[in-house]
Amino acid sequence: MKIVIVGGGKVGEVLCAELSSELNDIILIEKNSIILERLINKFDITGIEGNGASYDIQIEAGVQTADIFIAASEMDEVNIIAAILAKKIGAEYTIARVRNPEYSSQLNFVRETLGISLMINPELSAARDIARILKYPSALSVESFAGNKVNLIEIEVTENSPLNSLSLKDFRSRFGTVLVCIIHRDEEIIIPSGSTFLKVGDRIHVTGTYQDLAAFFKIVCRGDKQVKSTLIVGGGRIAYYLLHALSQSRVETKVIDISEERCEFLSHEFPNATIIQADGTDHDILEEQMINEYDSFVSLTGVDEENLMASIFAKHKGVPKVITKMSRIGILKVLKNINLRSFITPKQIVASEIIQFVRARANTQGSNVEALYRIADNQVEALQFRVKRGSRVCDIPLTQLQTKPDLLVAHIIRGQNVIYPTGNDRLQPHDRVIVVTREKSFDDIDEILK
Image (tube, rainbow, N blue to C red):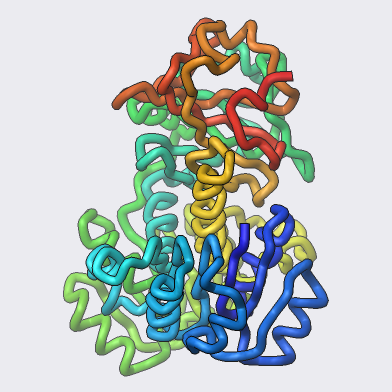
């Protein structure tokens, strides 16, 4: 597909990296010549120096024949204008990154009125991810897909866990619909089979019905209590959206931010939250605010190193749940044994959402992928297919399907029902099927067969 991207910042760079490897024709529009040249040399793309909201620049980039136009510059207004212009010029699908909270409540109205295919807010998405993680205290991460009908929850197998040394054959008989989809063992990613045994230190992704997951967590995470209080350092956009999300719950919230103006704004917007003006990265301040008495700690400043140090301090003080915002996740590969597990990376979240959209739009060019989800540090894909009549996967028990290695049929969505399949279940025409795999080239459900 021909894809035009406006903006070579954090999100734009991730998009160039991901989409240029998908056999797409990528054209990057960027005002900064140094950034543009660096990305052209780094990835298999072409580029144009200029303003992405300029008619002449868009024509020069060939937007009129683009399959997808993505506006991901640092300015919301530029992105909206660029996406509207691209649609008028002839781009088939348009995407705009919009971050301002003033627009967040109007995204659907603006999108439908202006003809923009997709509007994405990375800070809002990050806040929703954090809220989901806080809902499951033992979770390292929580992914929701299939219209929020399905959760994929990451937890760690500890030495005293009842999961330690348990085979997956016994796992399913013990925990009902709960299914282990992925095992992250050291640097290895495993798509498990019934003969796989769990080990201490494994990070596993599980899924199942809400009721069975609740029962599973009661057994596996004995002693864990629900999050009833959280201390947030950094009062930026993510904190704003997170406070909105938590305002519907009974979670006691406190935000520390160094800006007096920001604190006044948050105090006015969220009268039930406690807002403190101070340097939240100062350990003495955190001690004064009784950090050790909170159930959770979320570090959301704009500096990765500050977030890391504050989170490590919170963990040292015994805070049960610590969530850390990181822009440069590569730092974690250098630091070992920091004992932090839950990280939020907004640029990666928004890039993944855009990539899902791009792959889903490939339907019109011969693909049968309805949706795509990246998990386990982007090493695994969960692909959603619709089973067509006449497909070779139909009416055969899953145990008898000769599928390719490192692949798991995780969910069957039949009408409004979500089925967590056993070996006796069969795929039927019109089913939506979610397949978990390390393969990154499947375009049709029949391609899962050997």
